[in-house]
Image (cartoon, rainbow, N blue to C red; front, side):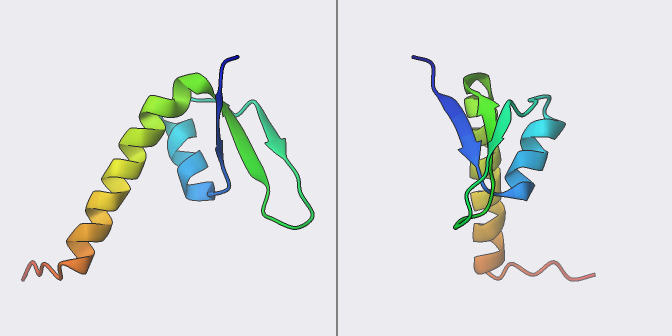
Length: 68
């Protein structure tokens, strides 16, 4: 069975779409936010996006200042 990528984050879904991955569906649940489904082929780009996001968050947490 081939797995799929799922996300509730609109920002993450937008990044995957920008990288060429089309959603294959949406899971609607009355309790939690809708979940967008992507093919398993999106997994590598999802990992790259999450790593980049973590890097940006770490940059902000470190308080790096770039004076103008």
